[in-house]
Length: 393
Image (tube, rainbow, N blue to C red; front, side, top):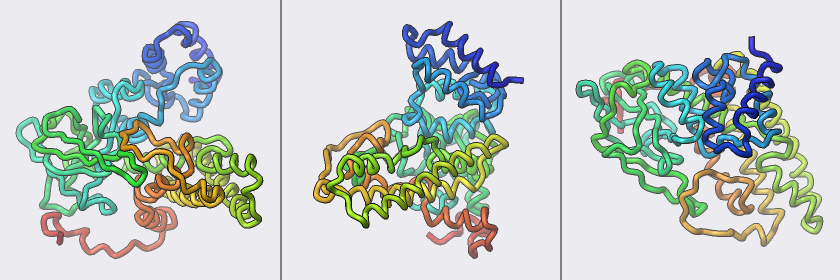
């Protein structure tokens, strides 16, 4: 049975064999994966040791103390937080062996081809079609709000394979090669001036059936694993005290006493306490995950994340007064990651507006919390037994 002492020993052996100071970064990360120290709760041979998820912190602390490189998790967050758990649960052994190691090491970036212009909040209404031809599927459609599509090698994709059944039942889940002919990525410039999001057009894209995850027509159930993990990844990320948005505004408050007012002080105190409560709640949620897959509780964390980010960034702009109206750079860029704390207050204020949309809109998540956490009656749904092809559009 793997315990904390065993993991410390394994970490020491890894560091002795591959000294971080003299080992190529990618080579070290590959060795860490092969040693089962990437995500210790994964099975042996897939970057883990079948150990309790809670012991990952032991490994991370040992390697961080030795100044070992990490896999830049913010850059590959979609792969780590969404694609990997879905592949682990529904993938074949061949798929797990092919995708998980380069995903964790960061050699291959992933994106998520879910939302569409006519299927965002109502994701199950998606219209991208996949038609089977022998051992391949021919995919046509459009996806939107795709983070990192301009960087991605692979995508997790859901498409409609049977229009003659109700919308939730005619969906299948695929792995799409973003370099295949017929995949076109176009930037979506945002209010920040950047284009971290994209729209993706799929024209006669051929996906081998060997890249299907789960059974044909069972894609909605597979997608729930992705979506539940996405909400936890966004709303339940591990942070130190005063990590995230509350950190910069607290720092400004301490360093700029001339900006303080009684009203701003009261509002900052309230938001600081709420941010700390959210942080500790996220820690509790991660501990609950040790026992199994994430559930609908992640929706609550995502709701709190979006609301707090928007309120805190608004307070920061107000605290700074005229300075808060400045914006450092409106240059059109295609960034590799979202950096909330490394930019100015104007960026944080503008970028946080998207927090209540990405990863599930606030309205949809409120329904999830109401129905699946609190057990309240479901909203009436008149289309649940209607074939997708017969739905009004």
